[in-house]
Image 1 (cartoon, helix red, strand yellow):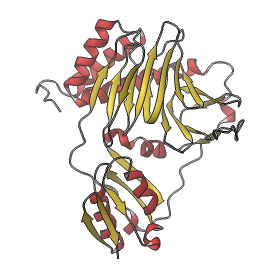
Image 2 (cartoon, rainbow, N blue to C red; image 1 turned 30 degrees about the vertical axis):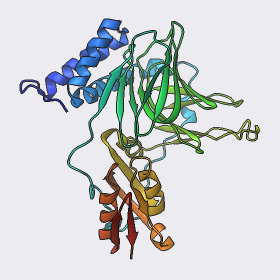
Image 3 (cartoon, rainbow, N blue to C red; image 1 turned 60 degrees about the vertical axis):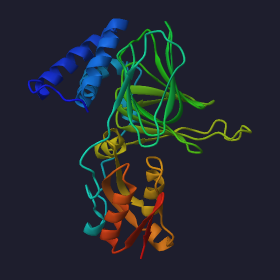
Image 4 (cartoon, helix red, strand yellow; image 1 turned 90 degrees about the vertical axis):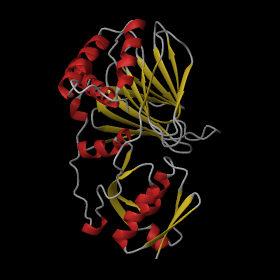
Length: 332
């Protein structure tokens, strides 16, 4: 992270970020997009401040973006259910490293075609688009940006991304993930596309429309998740419905922990946790004992530190660990 001059405190950073967010609402010229890229690259805090400013801007426009056809009564938010966990399973912060990995910031020229952006395993990248939209790419992700005068198309080829979309009613913003399209005007949402798994959409603010295969489009509001089933190559599963569910704010924050280089677990098995760590690190967590693998864990951990996670688990459950080349074993 590049140093920030002492006089540039948090308040001035937020003020500059708010100014950029306002300018992005009016669309940025190529020169402005380049200037924004330089400012974002100066310090990781700039990207975070800009994302917050964009979220505030989008939230203020949310009522108008919903439109007269949207019926909020069709959605209900389910309150977060307290987890029935023992204290020894609560490992919040048990393996968090002191710092978060560096954030890469990149930009593209307005109107460019086929620009590809990707992240390696364990990397998170922030991409600034010429219209002021901000895309945060999670680990092992790849997307292609295709902008034109009539549309803004993002092809998410693999992985996961958070989209903070600049409002532009004349050019819909569409994220395409396999057989699923997610359309938005001005909002904040994530799309996850992992090999062999259903496409997941999580709306942080605003409203999006999910279009999947031959099914009817589904509208989603903030704090809502949609799961679009995988269609077999033979065509089996055509017409399978998109499943939606309300998401509590605390669950939303857990789902977005990767933006800070962390993984948040809530009552999942150690086997499932080990699988999630494989997305972020080449070091595998090996659990040979099925009884250990079925144990449940809750906590917040550094995504690129599977060894630290294993040691925290061992301390909690009275187990042992053995670190080898490319793997860490958890055993009794």
